Image 1 (cartoon, rainbow, N blue to C red):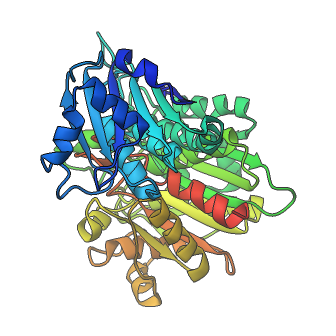
Image 2: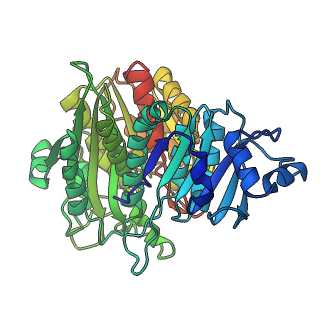
Image 3: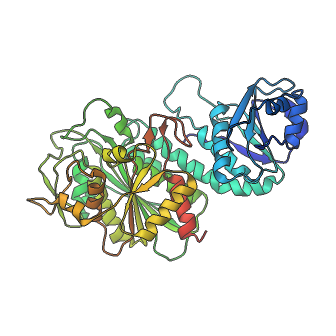
Length: 489
């Protein structure tokens, strides 16, 4: 796993500021008020900070903005970062400030003069998340994340607040690493090995091989991977931290590479299909976070791991397969494969664990990108209370999510002439008809939310908490959901 930058909280020691290496960050209120750390920096720099404020540099700035000054006189630091934050700044502003610091950090040591800031742990989280750099396959010099020291009045309280956030950050990094990994390195077998290694955190790991899935009748999942030399797997991660209650089930699509199968994708952009296991990546990252912070809840994560390749064994358009549920499926398009994987994993999750609720995540449809771009994932659900809770969690964590409808009218598009259902419903409302296909594999009375993360799992530009590439979207949202809904706050 890409290592998160080390973070430590310490009591203010103003005598060390002049010699602090790397970057030093000072808090200035929107009105230009300086705390003791700011006043010491102002003296060290012979009034440079006061001149900056008096010159109107703060005008038009928002809480969380950062102004950087290079090679400040009187200090050993390479840069002075002026963070604009009120003393009682909210979570969003604190994280935004942290992201700006993490972006500028560049592997340097960072000292944040937090003083009496109320939420220093949130600033640290933003900095850690944005300083991520996927360097596993680069030779030569690799960026050292550099240590971050946060000087605050109550370092013990700040450390206690940051401990669960550190666990979430590690989960986000796991997800980003998995989604960023090339398909020749993250094979289905390698993905299983990554999951099995998490048993050391206290997770119970179970892996089903192809023979076991054949015995269970998982014809939908197995037909996706039958054209590949890489074996298909269903990996299960169980966290039992909440007594005897039924678990929350998290289900992820794990297509480690998607050629489209016989319905082959165009060559342009196919290299991005290494991220088609994004849903499985999120589930794995969430389970890592929950186990690391010892969540007081029962959660089971299930991921279907396959590779959709072209060969003489590959599923053909027009083939009919039988899902574990017993439904027959006419495969109209082999590039609509993720829903076939999820159909069997969803049914297995319900039959085996009788969960109190099910949430699945998948890079499922290009239609989700057409509808929502790269700002929001799509949520579709059969249960208003559960869906509202997921939407609240996403808002609280600053991860974009928008609800789309379900309905019997959409499901009609999936009617097959020769089987119980077909796997695509045409271009109109493609995200919704895909969700209606999955809805068919949710038992009556089971609360369920489907999250189509095609537009947010990996992006070509910087996102709220991440550089270009894998965002880790969903780990923070689902961790928050577990805390708020299943741990009692």
